[in-house]
Image 1 (cartoon, rainbow, N blue to C red):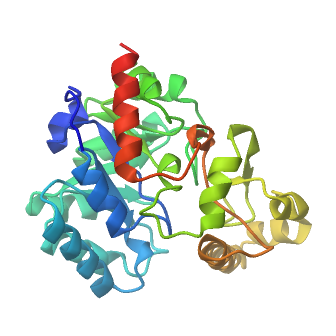
Image 2 (cartoon, rainbow, N blue to C red):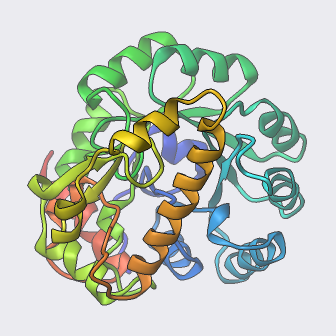
Length: 325
C-alpha cells in the first residue's frame, strides 16, 4: 500500500512501526491473515492465545505469521488460573520470541519475568491506577488503558478520565483501548498523552476476518447506540450488539443466576459454567447465522460503513489523521 508519513509517537518507537496502532486481540475474530495484513499496512496486532485449541496450533500460527512478515506482532494471554493452558502458551510465546505479549485477568509477574529473559515485551491491560502501578513495579513495558468504550470486557472510566490518571500514576507508556474509530480519534488520543491506541471493533468487518458475513454486516448496519452491556455471557459486563435475541433474553442475570453467582459454595463452578456457555454461544454466532445471535463489539462500529480490507481501513485512518492536523 502507499505509505503516508510516519506518525511519531511512543508506541511507534517502542515497536518500530509506522503508525501507533495495535489491532486489538479479539476472541474468535483475530486470525493470522488479519495480523499479516496489519503488519504490512504499517501497524501491529495481536491474537488471543485462546483462539487456538492447542498450544501446537498456537505455535503453528506464530510461525506462519513470521514466515510472511518481519514486523512486530503479539499474543494476548489470559494469565488467571481459569486459563489451564497459560503456562504452555507462555512457553510457546517465549520460545518463538514474538514481539510482545498482552496480559489480561490476573497477575502478569511470571509472564513479565519469563518474557523479558528472551527479549519479549509485555503490555498489561489495566482499568485503574492501582493495578497500573502494580504492573509497572513488576516491570511491564506499557499499560493498555481499557476504557468504558472498549469492545468486549470494558473498563469503568471514560478515556478522558483514565488516560490523564494513568499518565500521572506511571512512567511507562499508556496505550488507549476503546472508542477510537477514526483518524481524528487517533489524533485526539495522542494529544491527551496516549502512547498509541488499541483498536478492535473497526476490524471485525474485514475481508480477512473469518467470522460470518452476518456478523460483519451487523457491524455495518448497527452503530454506537446499539451497543449494550450484558452479564449473560461471562458473568462480568461485556459489550454486545443489541440484536433482537439479546433484547429478548435481557442483559442481566436472572434471580437464580444472581444467587448462584454469590453462593460461597457454588459461585466458582457457576462462574466457570457461565463463562463456558457464553463462549460457546459466541462461537456459534460468530461463524454461523442463528436466531440465538450474540455478537461482541464496541461503540466504534459507528465508523464501519462497509466490509473492506484491513489495509484499506488503515490507509483511511492515517489519511484522516493527516487531515485532522
